[in-house]
Structures are given as C-alpha cells and as structure tokens.
Length: 188
Image 1 (cartoon, rainbow, N blue to C red):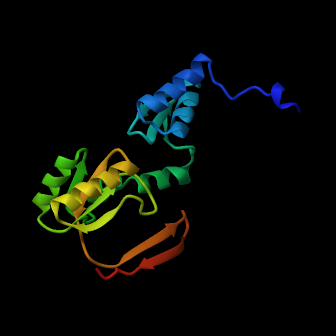
Image 2: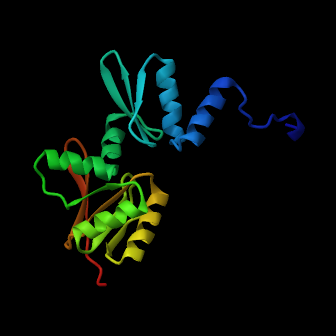
C-alpha cells in the first residue's frame, strides 16, 4: 500500500474527543475511561472511585472497572492493588494493620509521619510491584522526597508506620494458593 494513501490516526468525532478530554483533564486511566464510556453507552450508570477505578451498575448488578480489565479475577487484583482500600477492608474484618492514613499533599505527609513518631513507609495508594514505595524514612526531607516519588506513581499516597519483619506474597486463585514468595529484609 502506498504510504500516501494511509490516513493518520486522528480522532475528531465527538465521542473520541470526549473520551480523550476526560482522560487528560481528570487524569483518569484511558483503559478505564474507554470501558466506562462503553458501559454508559450500554445504559449503565458509572461511578468513579479514583483515577483508575470505576463501578458500572446495570439492572442491579455492579462491576468494577479497572484499566483495561473487567472480570472477577481482575477486580480482585484491582482491589488488592489499592493499598488504602485493602487496608480499610482488613481493618473492618478485624485484621491488624500498621497505623497511618492516606494523604494528598507533602505537608499532610509530614504531619502524618510526625504523628506516627518513628520510621514510616510512604507509598502510592494504588499501584503494584513495589513502584514508588519508600521504606523506613523519618527525616522531614526524606518524607517529602518519598511523597513526591509515591505521588508520581499515583494520585493518592499512604503514609503508615514501618513494621519490621518478613514479607510474604501469595498468588491465590479461587481454589488454591498457587505460589508464594518470601522477601527477606535488607540490612540498612
């Protein structure tokens, strides 16, 4: 095919413009925006939780929309990836969690770290694979830098007390724990 015959990828129709504008203006995940738009077009009511998550409701059924995925397994993954929400679920179920809270500014992160009075963990509220996490900081400059790093990975940041110990990660399916990993603590 002659390259002159190719049409550039331009999206000028009203629907595409609306979707892209929503993605850019509100810093929402493009995959979630596209799925949410399709759900709306299909008659669903869509409620946004944050820039990555939305819930579509149609005929009394609710589905969690996360990035480019919509199914039970990805919904569970999405919930697990949202550290602040997961922490709230654990607390409501009686599971002990480190003290701390979600913050939306560097000054708020400093106040929270000061209230916790010890080394803290600063991390994005919703991300996976350890991106943007800083462990064991207590100096105000370090807390501010950790906040910026976490903020770069997500819009909401969690500051919580640092609990020393071993870390285990498990991959769980509805019927089994299919793998587990042990992370030993690094010496400082």
